[in-house]
Length: 297
Image (cartoon, rainbow, N blue to C red; front, side, top):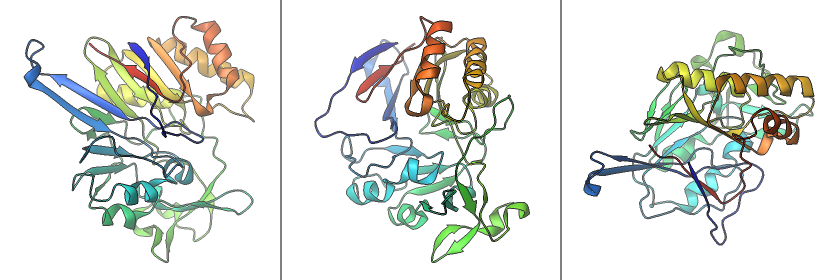
C-alpha cells in the first residue's frame, strides 16, 4: 500500500469523505497494452461543486447511507456533468427505501434522493438489494444484516409514499413500513463498496457504517467468500451518545478481523482513533482530504 498526497486546486469536501476510485487489471503483467481500468464514485456527498475527472468518464455510482448526507449534492453534480458522463452509466442504490422522504427528530425535512434527476441524466438506475458487480472490478455488499453486537444509531425517520413525484413506491416495500407516517429509519439500503486485491485480500469501503462497521466487513466477507481483509476505509459511525466501552468493543472486533490497514474517516471520532491506535499501532492510518491510497498486488 502506497500513500501519496493528491492536491487539486478548487477541490473541496464539506462534512464527509467522497472517494474517487480507479481500479486497474493487467491481463498480462508483462504487457501494458492489456490493461483494463474502470472508475467508481461512491457517495457524491453534500457538495455540488464536483468536476468530472476526464471526458466521458465511465463511472458506476454507488450510493449508501442517509439521503442529504450522501447525495445532497447529486442534482448539482448531474447538472454540472450533463453530457459528460457516458450514457447508461450504472447508478447503484441498495433498495427502494433509499428514495423515501426523511426528517429529523425535530420535524425538519432531511432530503430525498432525486429519482427523476438520475433518470433524466440517462443513467441506468440499479436497485441492488443483493451483492452486485460494479464496473467489472468492484462489488457491493448488498444490504447489510445486523449480525454482530452493533445496532443502528440513526437520528432520522422515514416515510413511505410518493408526494409530488418525490419519495418511494409503497408497493415495493414491506407492509410494516407502509404506515403513512414517519417511522424509525433502519437504513437497510446501506451498501459498502469492495475490491479484491490479488494476494492481499479485501479492501472494504464502509460508507458511514450506520449498519455497523463490523457488520459491513462481515457482509463483504460473506458476499465474496474471502476472509482476508487488506484494508477498511471510511466512517465508523462511532459518535455520541455511544460510549467508550461500545467503541472499545468495536475496536476489539475489528482487531479480531485482523486487517492490514484501517483508515477511519469523518464520523469515526477521536476516541475510536486513540483506542484503535493503541490496540493496532502499526495498522491505523489517519487520512485527510486529498490523500491518494494505492493498493496493489
